[in-house]
Length: 245
Image 1 (spheres, rainbow, N blue to C red):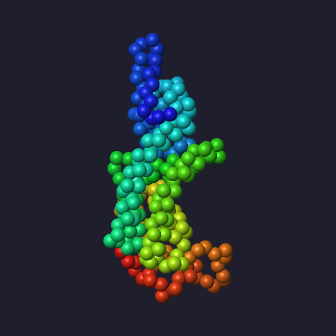
Image 2: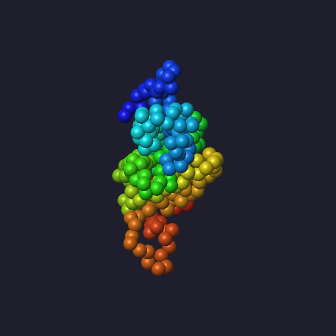
Image 3: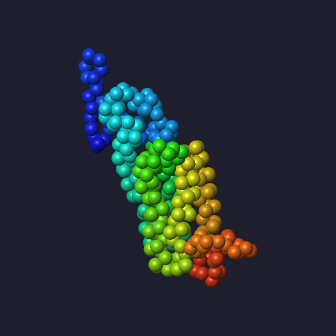
């Protein structure tokens, strides 16, 4: 059902009260964002939107239906996210490390920016989902891979241009960086400041010389092998002390 739907709800025998589905979805989206899908009840949604429970059930069916309709509105947020993040990776004047840092820093700015709840809607709403909410989990998972996919495509392109060693596992590198990104979104939701999150980005980038040589995962690491060395050859075209912006 489109979020453009308008419903007229009867209020006793008086004049009909116009129900603004768009405004209701905006409120519901923020509530889901702040508290997650599981922790947000229909009672919470009724109280926050000011709509009567029968009106919400008539318009959306149930909480899951309301969440799915709110997700339609989230498409605009996701499109805006991509429009803001992708230029960080498409900048031809930035080497792979600098572009990565720009991307992570821009994500932090998005997580802590004004006008929206802190964190990331997809990550905040997907935390602590129960087994009964697997359809919602699958819906969120289908969107949640966007940052990782952007990084994966970027690293493959830069590897082809010679900026990353041929042995670097670009898929593994993108997945590795997607994990702290999700963690920073949760921390932003919990009140961690922009400055503190940028310090975490700096810490990640301090590891860049090792990350840039990240090989494909092996079944096991032999005793005595330094896992942090990642099998790197000091002769690779990646500075072993500092990363190149």
